[in-house]
Length: 300
Image (cartoon, rainbow, N blue to C red; front, side, top):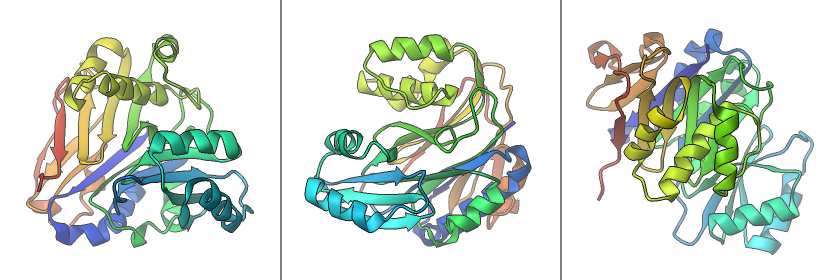
């Protein structure tokens, strides 16, 4: 089944408590995905010329202070927030250079995300435990998305949990399954895309990254999914500026959208949205198949 949630703050007053509400939404989806849970949250943009990485270590005894010293020497980096086996690192380098440095010098660490604003946290286990372990109630941000997984296409691992990120500040959560992901993965490898899991969702994320790299807009990249991806899906895509929703041509997997003056929310079921302030008065609708719905921060 899997469960998806997303929250976009239209009002700045909501940003300091984004994590609290995103966590509450995720808990409502607990019985849709007991295998693993994860979130992407967009917050604290780093200055131009710097990059933000979210790193994961399978070793829960890892000394992140030692990691900080190595990163400081190699990339002029500072280790930031540590949550469970994840750590945010800000580096004095562009993201591509930083990613290559990590793969070369710390192959024991897995790169969960890279960019200027995104942070990704995910782990095997129930969403209720995840929310507490990762202290989501402490997190502020402009928007975020989350996922609870019931695995179908690959093993239950932290790396295979959602969100999946294959591009800067870009990530994807997915309810459904893709039937042509193995063939599409080989096509994308020929285009220079790399993969860390056998997860079908990573293929969809890489497809979007590839289309954006080739000059497509996010809306055009998502519309391309309708032609190039076979299977059933509800996608929620996070970007530095907002998020977007797309359902497959027969809208097989459930989705609900709601909007107030203060927020836009998406959930696999209404109960995930019902925990938000003002939900009873929100405009609510079911997204149509093959239609891209998107919200972005206003340019200032």
